[in-house]
Amino acid sequence: MYDSRRRAGAFAVVMAMTVAPSMASAVDRWTAPHPGIRHLHRVRPGVDLHVVLVDLASPEVSVVATRPEDRFTTTSEFARRYGTVVAVNANFWGRGSCGLAAGGGEVYPTIYEDGCIATLGVGPSNNAVALDTSASPHGPLPAMITEAWSGKPWLMRDGQAPRNWVRPQHLYRPNPRTAAALTADHRTMILLSADGRRPGVPGLTGFQMVDVLREFGAHDAINLDGGGSTTLVMNSHLINRPSDRHERTVITHLGIRLRPGAAWYAGQITGRGAPESVTAGRPATLWVEARNTGRRVWTGAEGPSVELVDGGRTWTARVNGEVQPGGVGRFEVAWEPRTFGNASLRARLVTPEGGLLVDEPIRFDVAVRAPAAPSEPRVAAVTPQVMTASMGFGCSAQPGAPSGLAWGVLGVFGSLVAALRKRRRPAA
Image 1 (cartoon, rainbow, N blue to C red):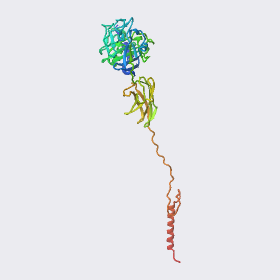
Image 2 (cartoon, rainbow, N blue to C red; image 1 turned 60 degrees about the vertical axis):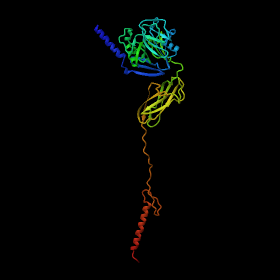
Image 3 (cartoon, helix red, strand yellow; image 1 turned 180 degrees about the horizontal axis):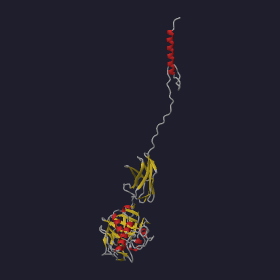
Image 4 (spheres, helix red, strand yellow; image 1 turned 90 degrees about the horizontal axis):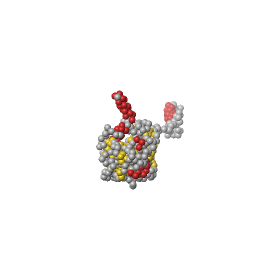
């Protein structure tokens, strides 16, 4: 018995090391698809999960649950009917909803009690609560609450995470998971959707869910229906990979939608480019393309801009032309490197107010050549010329021949010699 337990414990440790590598090795991709909404897709060996952070203080977003008359639909169908930009499956279900469920202020008519006492509720003004509904699984709803979801068990309660769950036992094994949580100030809702039951991606245990939710500030968190029911739909697209390879029909859902009339700037990077090499001191063009995913038109005079920073200097570029919502715009940055070498540049897409529009880093790696060294000035070959003497001889000097000055000196010398000889000649 002792040996078998020891072997089982060793196997569990090995599995934990295999399935749950350190958080430092995670590869995260963040996007901000809508105001008040941030989305993380984390992929690493053994893990494929999504986290959606919803700012309940944002005036553009609202939270909605499935009304009783719309129960038992897929998450995609719920998202279509309710116009949500984010939707996940919610309560466990069987002959009805496991624990309290409500949508639009209406409590579900068929509710069975099977330990689903951990409940999150939200009202029309995004006021959120976390409550134990063991004494009121059939309602009534707390004041100012119109949407409610229940699960089992509490993953976190008042900042504490139980480590000895009695039910359900599957929390001790990796599985696809769905969870919902609130931060301590109840201003942020956290939605977790983790894939599993496929080769290389077994899913998460309850302990791993707690670690992920705690990372994003969860204070109260509930475990919702998982397994083949786990689905995440964003912007009308199924984002995760359900273990059944298709969506299941589920009893209730949790959705985030945008309030009518809301307008905002939002974007998604679709491309970027730069020359492979440039010359220091000479302008070069780097470009970024982005899709307008918001509800405001981008123009060169008003709209987002790209900021490129290099060595304390900032280059800014606005979009070329006009970009309607859904369209793609191009930003061309005129950059002038000052030093040569390998340059690793970072740029960001910002709102007119200077806020970060896209969390995704924009990176450029460019080789910068030194400018060509200036060549030595070429001097034309000049044939040496000797100045002409002005002594009555108008000849020019030629190379290798006596100059006019030389001839003049010789002539004077000859005249002096002749005069001396004449003076010495005796008289006749």
